[in-house]
Image 1 (cartoon, one colour):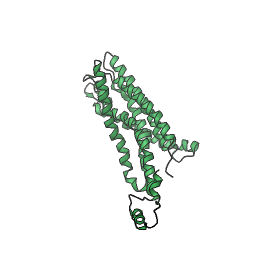
Image 2: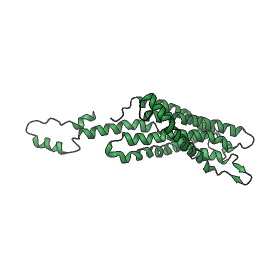
Image 3: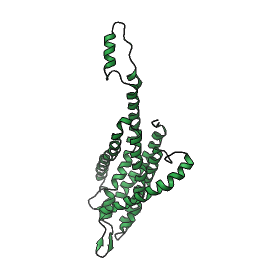
Image 4: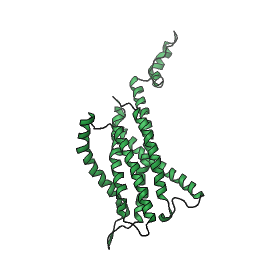
Length: 265
């Protein structure tokens, strides 16, 4: 139906002046290029929406993962303890290592198998990262359950697997999203590609706050909230499992959307 915007409407005889005015009015008649660019932008909306839940899992790495670490045994020596916020360095380190492995080893091997210059398509890369985010949340839930059941504070290095998986998922999905939005937006909107990518994380932060508010409100009715001030009385493991299930469902939706997507030629 968008093609109608580029079709010159037929006018009755004698209305040549009105027809000429409509042809000159950009709100009544668009070029074929404008129509195709609008189609391309609209086709990106489902991909953008299906990445919001992934963004929610990324946000947890900067909030609840750090809070987990603050109540664990962070001592390295009797006089030195790891600052909780520095745990994000584990995710950054895993990203740095895995980006090198991906670019130097995986891409050449996959290029030989698939014939794709990137090894795999951009949307496949994003989907793989989503799968790693599900594994990250499952790992976080398992560690949190172990922490709650342990009579003594466990080592903060129990959080290493979930931060490592978070870094690997970022290598696939966040980098893939940057490539996707830069590559697939219309050529005259390339400068906005990074804005579309950042808007995923920004909107996901608001969505995360909304989910937390809803879960907190619902669990408070039945007694103790999942987000008590004392982390030992919270049920972050339940919350992580909830996000893992939502991420799994979202991954299935994303696969359906990605399979129908047509890349810009």
